[in-house]
View 1 (cartoon, one colour):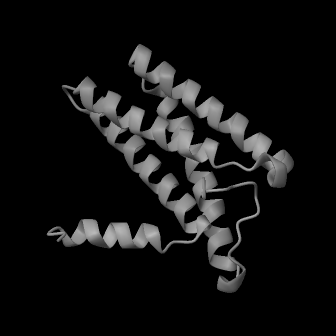
View 2 (cartoon, rainbow, N blue to C red):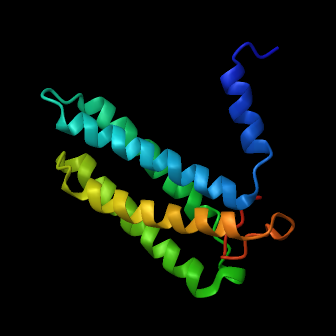
Length: 140
């Protein structure tokens, strides 16, 4: 029996989400982790372990987005997203190695734009047509 109702809610929300909603959820969590890293960098005594963990979580999310791309159906869009995700990961590696937060804002801004685009698609496509066709396959 699950004694944590919030955890049960989150699991149900993920299990019942469309592919588009899952993508938006991934972006939201990545943005949350980047904000955590940025806030920690700005503190008077930054805890670098927290920064590192937040960046690694964001990289894991970006990797999940990368492996979900369907290059066969997505064509140029999937290719462009893949290159953008590679760019994000490289910038985050640089942040983690140099402990220079200057690249965090750029990655955050770009991810936020992508999240907003996915959210807009999710909100405008009729529910019965919720087949994500922009080269994303979250089934495997």
